[in-house]
Structure formats: C-alpha cells, structure tokens
Length: 292
Image (cartoon, rainbow, N blue to C red):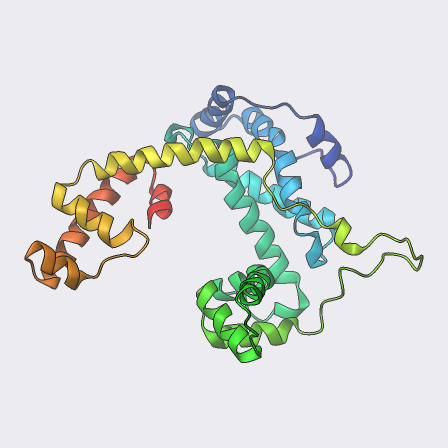
C-alpha cells in the first residue's frame, strides 16, 4: 500500500515536506506503475499529492467528521486515482485526482452523517452538499429584485436550480432541520471571542489547482475544436445552435431555416454527436463528460 508506515499524526507533516512533481516526472511515475506495477513509483506519486488530499479533506470538517477520518478517506480516493490514471491522455494527475478524492470524502460523509444515513442517491448527495449554498444565492437574487420568497417558493426554486425533484428538497430540508447553529456565535464566552465563521476553510482553489485547471481547460477546449472540425458544415451549425449558444434553438425552428423536417434535424444532431463522441474517445472516455 502506498501509504504504509504513515499514521494519522505523521501524514500531514510528511505531506507538507513532499516534493512537487513537474508534468514530465509525474507522467514517468504513472507509466512505471501502470506498465510495471512499480510500487516505489506509486508511493512517490501519491506522497507528492497528499497535500492536495489533506487540503480537500479540510474543506469537509464542517460536516462534523473527525479530521483524521477525512484524511484517510481522501487518501483512499487519491490511491484509487493513481491506480486508474492514464498519463497518455494529456491531463495532469492533480485534475484527475480531485474527482476521486472528492467522491471518496463525500461517500464517507454521507455514510456517517446521522441525518442522512437512510439514503445516498445522487439527488440526495447533490442536495446535501449544495442546498445551503444555492439557497443563499437564491435569497441574494430575490433581495436584489425586491422579492420575498416563502418556504414553498424557495423549495420550488431550489428544485429547479439544482435539478432535483421537489419531494427530495422537502425531504432533505426535514432531515437537516435543527442541525445548524449560528456561525456568528463566538467560540468562547468572552465578548472578544472569535466567531465560528472566521474558522471556515476557504473553498477557493489554491494556486496549484488553478494552474492545473487552466491548463486542462485549454486542452479540453482544443479537443472540442478538433472534434467539431470532423463535422460537416451543416452538422456543426446544428450542434452549435442546439447546444453551444445561450438560448438553444428548437428542432422546429432549425428545420424551418434549413428546409428540413424536425425528425431529420434530430437525426443529424444524433449523427453529429456520434462523430463527436468517437473523436473525443481518442483522448479518453471520461473526456466526454465535459461536453455532455
């Protein structure tokens, strides 16, 4: 196991002293593990990115789980990412690992949060981790427009924005009721005590994540341009009008413009997406999720 010999106390200290890998070294280590099952290479790759796992684990402390447990779950996600990572697809390991680490921690939190142990569907998970943030955003927008939303209106808006059934919103609100405390409460009885809100982890991406995301975002845009270049002019126009503009066109309006039936437009759209998927698959099946 890549983390043998590390315990809960030594992990953070060793992670902070770990080396920073450049893209070439990172790819060499990943290939050594993939092709030769070189455990030393796997250990070096995982150790170098433990600081990323610990940083992500810290963002979930507000859900009440022990930090050591969160770090262990983040470590498991990191090792799964290292085991499945393919360096030949041109994506930095940090970007790929983020998804595995986050998924591992979220599964752990959902399993151990007493209010939601009865279910962990994708809809419930989306609500659990996003509902409060989205509700605050909706409230700000309503205030800016001079509106006051009652409970029913807020639940309806939450369901629409997050994209889940209204019944799931109502159920999750009930499960989370009574579990909150004021973030403006002080941590001690002293008048000058620090408020809990001051102890919240900054959710913004760090410099390393920002650089990796910018690099991979540009790479994926290039892949999309390449895939679009394989389409005919008509197919490219249909895909653009149907999926890549702010107000997508209907099949009927495109049919009228191009002198085709709605069904023919639908067929051409499906044909174009088939070509896009085939081209994108050359960069890895998971790339398709960015353009779904």
